[in-house]
Amino acid sequence: MLTRGHLIGQLVDDFASVAAQARQRGKIHLFDIHTYVEDFVCEVLNRIYGLELVNLNKDSLNHPGLDLGDKAKRIAFQVTADRSTNKMKETLKKVTAADKAAYDTIRVFVIGEKQGSYTLDGEPFAGFGFSKDNILDFDDLCAALMPLGLPALMSLARYVRDELRRVIVELEIPDENGITQSSIDAYVEALPKPTLSDAAKMNAYYVQARLDFDQKDAADSIKALSEMLSPLPRQTREVFRLMLQRRRPDTAYSEHFFIHDATLRRIYPREDLPEDLQLLDHAGLIDYTDWGDGKAPYWRLMIPGWGTNFHMIFVDYAEAKGINLNKPLVALDFSDF
Image (cartoon, rainbow, N blue to C red):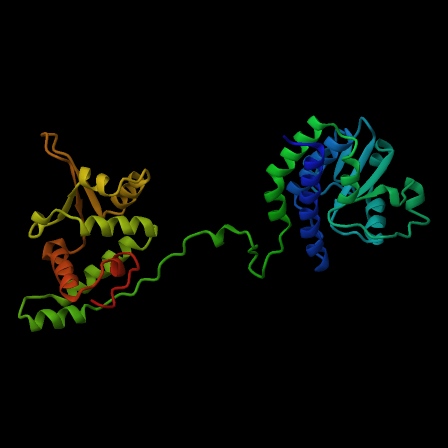
């Protein structure tokens, strides 16, 4: 059972995570705040203080001085990662006469940690009745959690947990290429770098075996096969390799290898197999055939160079040399050929 103490502790930890990320930005003077972070702060302030703040930058991009406003309760906020006294001064200087008339209270919410003390004498501070109490950070929000009831805490904790990752991402520090630590690039499969072959090794093998072999045709077929496979995900290339390895043995001397659809689905019963087959079909590497005569439908493997039987030459050579088909068909390394 969730208790008030547990929920408050969770919120304190989550707010601390956001503050820590913002402090890192502040250390290198990255003070710009994404609209998404402003919206997050807006919702949290509304839930904790019972406000109806709206993001003023949505109606007017870069609203001067202020980011959030509640005209009914006549209170507005600037949201910033810059905690300096100068930032407070510049914020108040930018407030328009219309906004000064619309809002009795101007506050600044510091994403991170506010300073221990401020010198806020004279103008423009006096004209707005602006003191250190008008500057808030996440520590102030944590203190304001105490009076909230259990339903309000549960709702707030759920909202913060749902939004936390995106907020942290928006506050991450990009590298020189604009890539952040949690960028999807870290999870995206890299494109393979094919290693092609001029088929010289195959030629030497077949010359020694005194068998006809067209080296140029083989080199062109290797290049074409590599170009067809390289855009595909690694898993999809592995499915193609599996289909070739488990092909019907009685197709060894036909124009194309093939494998029955039912056979493939039983030896590789993954739910995402249809997506791999769709990609291979679109790439022109396989072709589905169902004559509707009661015989089992099958997939033809459309390896380039079929007019000169390259598919048979390719497989025969790999088997003779003990080459694992994973190397050329998945890693796209044809250096052994």
